[in-house]
Image (tube, rainbow, N blue to C red; front, side, top):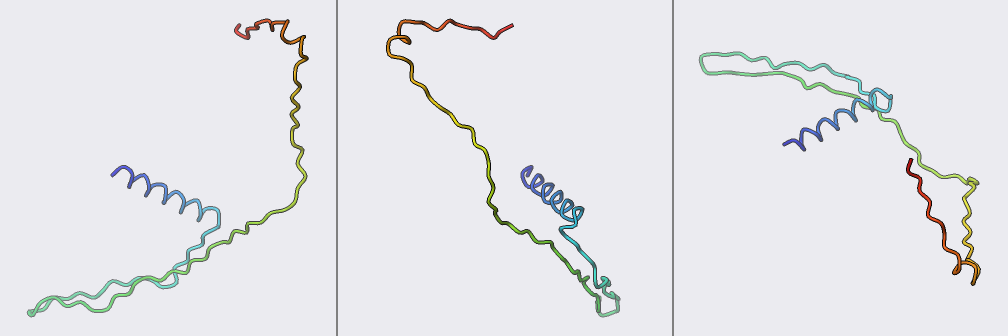
Length: 97
């Protein structure tokens, strides 16, 4: 049950963000009208009524690519000298203060 409520909340937030950003524009083009309900000796009769109509306009997204020059870091690995690295032990250092 919590998952359903959470999904509904996220959906409402996305809808509000779309309307606030101008990506989604909703205009009502026809008003709603309630049906005319009357009771007689024979029972209840209902007539008329009208559903509302809306015009919805959405924005569009364009996805593309372009060429760019990006500097990438370069890593070089240097192997130790044969005899020098085996005879010397690296001193232990501590960064704790």
